[in-house]
Amino acid sequence: MKMILPLMMLALATGAGTAQAADKAAHPPLPAGECIDTTQINEWHIVDARTAIVRTGPKRYLVALRHDCPRLGIAPPGLMFRPNHSNAVNNRGRICGETGETVRSSQQPPCAIESVSRIDKQRFDELSASAKRHGSGAEQPTTLPVH
Image (cartoon, rainbow, N blue to C red):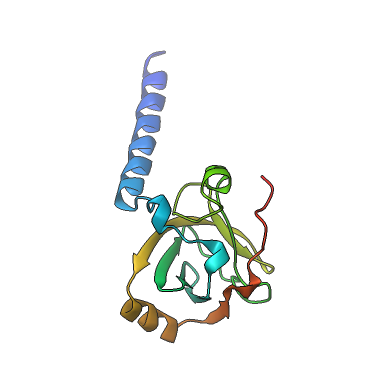
């Protein structure tokens, strides 16, 4: 009987780790050179409570959020991306879709980023046409946040 509880806990922990690994495999982070350079954001759009799109020059991105974030982009300063510690130090603050990255606005606490993927101009234009809110990259902080 004493062995059953530890074995059950181990099975639960192993299953949760497998689910997280499978989720990350379905949405792998972007390579460093393909990540969102937050200093180069030209425009952003809030498509719905869990989806934003971002353009940095010719590159366009779909940013999926882990949970609903209904107040993103409501008031200035618009969207503010925060890299995880590793990217803040090693990748000039870029957003790649890795664990620990967030986005927020003045009316919305930080929202965890689930994934970041590149999209083409046509998909970007389709999504931006139905977006609830939008803005330019001018609202991005000019310095990286302190961790």
